[in-house]
Image (cartoon, rainbow, N blue to C red; front, side, top):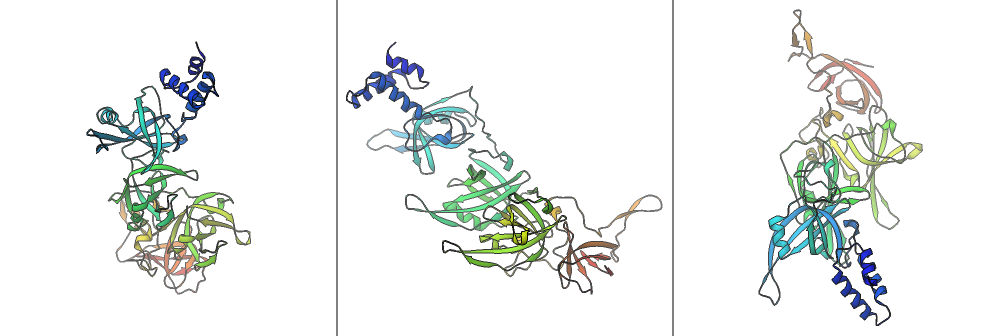
Amino acid sequence: MGAIEDVYEDLETDVEFEEFAAAVEDKVEQMGGLADEETAAMLIAHELRDEEADTIADIEPGMNDVKFLGKVTSIGDVRTFERDGEDAEGRVCNVDVADASGSVRVALWDEMATAAEEELEVGQVLRVMGRPKEGYSGLEVSADKVEPDEDAEVDVQVLDTYRVEDLTLGASDVDLVGKVLDTDTVRTFDRDDGSEGRVANLTVGDETGRVRVTLWDDKADLVEEFESGEVVEVGDGYVRERDGDLELHVGDRGTVDRVDEDVEYVPETTDIAELEIGETVDIAGGVIETDPKRTFDRDDGSEGQVRNVRIKDGTGEIRVALWGEKADREIELADRVVFTDVEIQDGWQDDLEASANWRSTVSVLDADGADAGAGRTTDGADAGTTDAAAADTGLDAFGGSGGADGEAEAVADGDGTATAAADPGSAADVEFTGTVVQTGSPIVLDDGERTKSVETDASLRLGEEITVRGPERDGTIHAEDVF
């Protein structure tokens, strides 16, 4: 066995020996006698190894032929085109393949396109050899050779409909239904080729979690069509990673549509008393203090803005700093608010402070538990609600079981049967203890889980903890005793 054969035997490659030997001969000729056949064979082997892609994430534009393994996640339609100077019609089919590291589009030409249309199925694992290049929608590989591999396994889920917990890096053609938790504005940026790009984000959640949805270019304007609390369906999305978190991206093929479905999002919030510096957590509570928005100059000369609010739950209270666009959210005293992905920092006078930045979401709940973004008027008043609007929101709005005090209670008759104690003309006395989060008429109390509207002539101070007792009618306690 010669030197070329020895090098080839040690090389695990799909390249045929005749092709390898021809490449060695060309390399010897290119180097003008500076390398013998063995040296040239080793150089060719090194180039081939460099082009072996351990994962799809290893593929880069500018590589020569690359080889990789991937699972088919979507199959496009076969398109025909006219080749320059040829009578024969060309055919192409785009196939998305993925592994645990990411996904890439593979272009199959002519006979391979025909075979894909007739034989290829979503979920199959393929061995692909081809040339990477920068395509219209990002990196793609123009395939030279594609073979199914029935024995190989690739850890990528392919589902008809996804939930947030089903999302995996590299998934494409993702359809997901979720509730809009927060929206951002459209931003512009400059691409390397000098063109201007556009991007916007919205955050959606379902019963399994939440995910940031990134809308690119023409799709970015969709963010202005939706408000917090609405339910949308994201179609033909693809999953990418940013700062260690998965995101669902929507490009030229993707869609976002409003749908008439019920989706429950239940955040796993952390008690305020349990917060520690350096954590990134979700918190919730009633608003007991609000500050005006402030602007400031950054070191780079740009202008920033921030607004502080203080919230309280059953374990404690904390100040939340709303940065950038978050400072524009309409948050008022007695609102029930959920903040997600806030950073816990050392605040003023050694108190802890929660920082809500671009990654955070801010959900204001109305009396029915829905996000209040769609119910706010431009002057900050609750549209269609009056002085009882803040009653009985709490975390029960996310699907908990808590009921309001003063609801009709079943009482036992003398014969042991139960009847409703509610009388249209009367109301049972209730007792409620909470912190004054709104003065005036009505007064609003918050106990960390619920808010109650109270009618009383007593003079009370904001932040004072009191107990009231009296009949409750139409969601308002008419206090006869205040102590």
